[in-house]
Image (cartoon, rainbow, N blue to C red; front, side, top):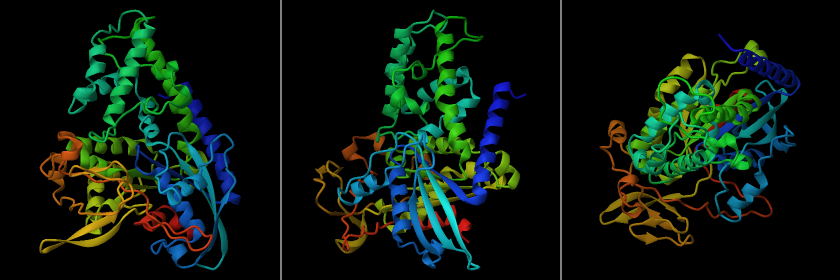
Length: 486
């Protein structure tokens, strides 16, 4: 039976959904959530999407734009006064003029785009697209709402004691062995435990391991909550029973519940529950680099992410009283780091990674798709002669400090690299037969890795911003909003 607080929360969500529905009668709106785990390319995706629509980009698969039915797309004032505006102009300048990738998303932001278009029957219409950018780490926090501290603690310690995490968690585990959950409250011991647990989570995110399942998400991006009690807790080895009053265990429970109340519930209530469509960006290449353990960890993270959504086909009743996400797109980013011959294989790997979760979504009536894309293409393709063979290669400018075969790149020189073909044996890829992975050796000696490239050098035509080259961004747009522009 639902608790009183859960019933109150449901009533608040329904009231907000009713308000949004009323506004949408006069101004049809799609709230598109854009998320992904660290370095998946959320900021680049939004910047490229807005630039392409407002500039009239080359999107042949995006039917309404390719056919000329979109008359104009323009930015409009920020819809929510309490949410920062997505810094589109600054990010575009960073990409085009400085040839740097924008900084990662560390907080929520929004941008409103108004699209004037013509329906197939000739009628003139307007669609408002509210783009909500938020860190994927926040999304992985949502399952905590249905867990007790004891459940989360047991799951977190089980993860920390498996695979490559074992060594990374060793300092935290050593401190954990000194803690008695039944002893009295101890602020200093708790501060040390929280710091060591955060250090362990941060180490898991390193390129050599590329782990994805790392809640609580705010531990890695605390913002103005840094040092607060709500972010100062850690898992404990717990005995049977319940927490004694004023014990270390009870202290951890209290702070875990505060984290849910202060951090997780407001995000769910004010932002996540209002989404209509969602794209989840996935840096699958980092998982390939790190090896099979990272792929399995990514698989678990994607299942957890999809379980967060209240999915299903939208109806008038669901729109009135509790909106549902009716379209979810999983996108493997950085497809430009591979030759186009491997793009379909990249999609196959991502489809395998999210397969079980996608099956549940489709049964609920939601439309789910998978795509390999590059919102901004940093490379070109070429055939490079090697002996008697011509290898399908990519041309680009590696970022300063990138290493390959012992060579460090200066960030200015364009090079041709042969990225290799992704394995066709998906079982081997996930079980370790296809490659060893970056975490098995030093970074400059790994047998399977991808360079990071700088954004491309673009030519201006007068004062107009140059078009941003992409791979399959138009296909993503067609899936996400194409049906609302018929």
